[in-house]
Image 1: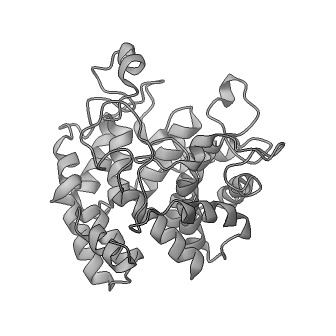
Image 2: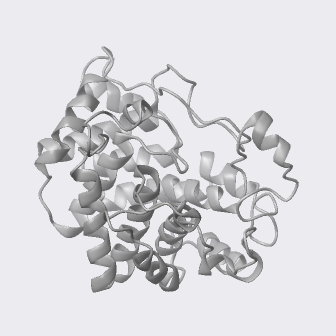
Length: 321
């Protein structure tokens, strides 16, 4: 498996959630073909499996951010749990569950009626107070057709002076973080795709993009040193975590929506992605987050990852086109 054709065959020999994206993003299959494959996410493979764990009230694991049976000791001993509603919805969005499907529409309705945030009891689609959580809620809500405009307005108002966001803002932070910023940006661009956005949300999106671009996606503005070495290591699922491949895939999505050309300041991160390609043409999973999950979707740390490879190949294809 050294040529791109063999790698694509390897990617296609997988779950429908990966196959349909390979068909759309890497081999330019006609839309009826990839849409038919995408429809299988609801009834086959990982998508169907995740939906099978959904509670009757529309939630997962009985809670919005943490499971109903959550004990704080679990976070310390095993890591953050990833089985509650917010992370399950984000994973279904990554899988590509069709938002027009009856199951997706019913899920949006049930969550709106029954789910409340652990932080303050707010209705789910109204969001809570933390920017990372609200950014992902906007991304999921906009993708699945929920009204998240009130959260968008709050995120626009929560932008910091340096152009980005930080989920520690209410605790006094005045500097943006890479992770908070990418979570919010993904929400704003999904909102823009679904609803057109507002002049204010579009301005905030461009400001957040500039925050990342002037730092070459991973460097400190003052010293030029990497802000965190983990930003250069690829993980999946990202959940709330940041790495340069996640950021590059965001910029690809944003550019395809807005018609913008690739920004030259992405070049260093692109070079890093190229350098991480294995001899067999795939990309490895460098690390993964600890904590309770419904099931694994990668073959383990250090192994070739279909998810990381899909993301890397479509980013490079966009950059080189």
